[in-house]
Length: 301
Image (cartoon, rainbow, N blue to C red; front, side, top):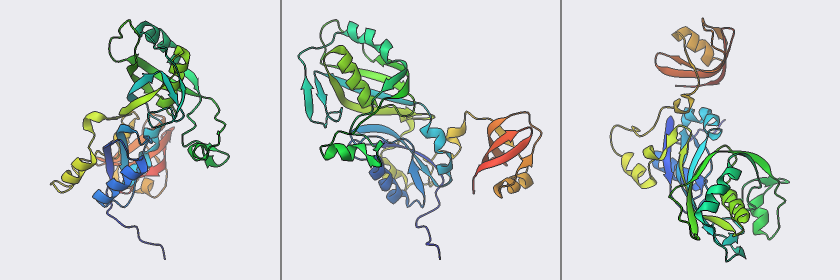
């Protein structure tokens, strides 16, 4: 007999404002405990030293997670100049130092080299697997995992404040980047190119796709809201990450067929991935081709 899933069937998206000091998994565990949710997951891991937007999918919303993990991320971070650390952030051991400090003009000129598609070597202290083992576990054992460069995309990067002409000890940046980009590696590589070394002193994610810090809720606030009516009013609809894909409406009978995994035909010239709706509710994520709707993910609502 299958073991019954514990918890309530809660459906929707929660924008969690993850605090510094918690892993993403630990933060999600706290959400599970507060909401007593039967099923949930997060889209886009944040390091323990980072804060900010951690999208949490609950129930049927977990079927839309791929649309969030593949979306653009926005960060605000402080690069501290003069040191390089083995973790590429403030928690690591100092492995190199320099008396040089960059000026604002040099930093401004450097940013063009870190825009567009670039090659980036991930930090040794990362969750990337090397021969089946996490790189950070190898690094903690004193080994040096062989990290290979990969291509990532930087859509925009800028220094937040006007940069003074004299030497600087740190700089605040805002960056919008694609999937797989490590901000810690960005600060490390900028420091090396400037000839002064650098690491991330603080890091905050301000947005992931359709989710921004403006609507983010702290764990303490969530604890308060869960006891206030109406219940779960702080959750966003499960289809929130799907705003950029076309929607197709179907009848109730067609919706039932799709929910049973059967394709249906509709009078539509659209093609590609679509969101299917019926009576105001999401039915499925489907592929539409020549009027044929084939369900890929079905929502059990």
